[in-house]
Amino acid sequence: MTVLQPGTGAIRSEIYLPATLETVLWGRLPCATDAAVLTIEPGTAVTIDTLSHEGILEDQGRDPAAFFARFGVPVDGVLDDAVALAASAHPHDPAVDGPHVVTGPIAVRGARPGDLLAMTVVELLPRVPYGVISNRHGRGALPGEFPRGGASVVSVFAAVDETGAFGTMPRVLGGPHDIRFPLAPFLGTMGVAVAGDERPHSVPPGDHGGNIDIRLLVPGTTLYLPVQVPGALAYVGDPHFAQGDGEVALTAMEASLRATVRFDVVPAADRASLGLSALTGPFVATPEYAVPTGIDLDLDEAVRKTVRTAIAFLGERYGLDPEHALAYLSAATDFDISQVVDRVSGVHARIRTADFDRAPGSGELPGSGGVPWSDEPPRSPERVTRDRPESRTGSSNTLGSEEGA
Image 1 (cartoon, rainbow, N blue to C red):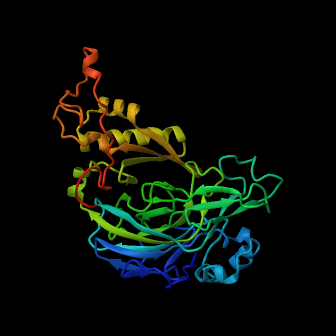
Image 2 (cartoon, one colour):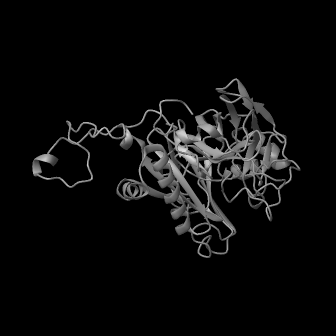
Image 3 (cartoon, one colour):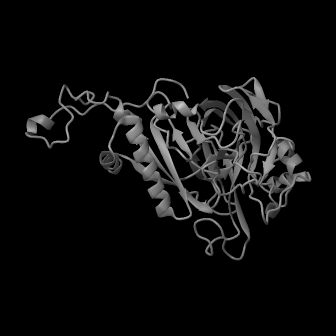
């Protein structure tokens, strides 16, 4: 695999934003008073280099060349921009700042509070053939139990196999890489600037997005966020090669990506057509699912917030009354834990948009041969002995509409 050093290799978009000392923040996220490093028109795609924080952090020596040499990575296999950031005087205090590096902010002309910013992931290219999974400082899902033996940080080196489709890792330190798991790269951090003049900590996600760690955000998906400041001031970072829901160790397989993201603006007047007029936080659309989210200090409350957002979406977008929306969610929707390690917990639901691919009031299920769709129980065995409708997967990430984000 070719290492994608700054400015080299495949760059999909005509606009390229490298990760330099001038274009990144480390441990903090943009706020309203930050100057944009790039200004674009709505509908523009930008290719953005992102940097993983693993290997550059102070508890790993703040020297990525030396850190990765311990795992057999040659100097030319370490990213130059990671080396430059770690060696610089770029402000980062691990006692008060988060670990994440974000590239941006990017101003989108015409975006203003009340609108939604739609960030569509077009392409994600691994920049290196390896990553790191870390548990540190009594954090993660089992604080006080891990790291064991008084260690402050345990970093497990994971490699990308020769196919590029799987990660590998050992069973014990120094062992052979005989564990193999699928890769699904995504950006753990995608967001917009907050109002005011204080940069938020990079760890807890919120209404601004940020470190949401939703692994569904692979190429072909869109993240919708309420705009909080003029221009939106968007950013991306915290690149992952793979993550399980929950992210229980503390990190995913952290590894740098070259991301191409398209930025669109949904005017306030158009939000209702997407079922998002009341949206206050992150919302994801995939080709198959509409994905409301909930974030809270309490995991149970995060679930409740997700359910409420889902009910509002189903009512506005698909015409369900609250009782039927709740019933549908209970029968047909999974509520997943995004992560439990980012100071607050995140939950997301997966609503199959194909379940609503028939016009309201049409009276027939797709493929039902004319059998009415009714709340009434079946009156005879003959009424229910029909072929099961073929499952269908949506072809867009636009919440069941035919128009692009």
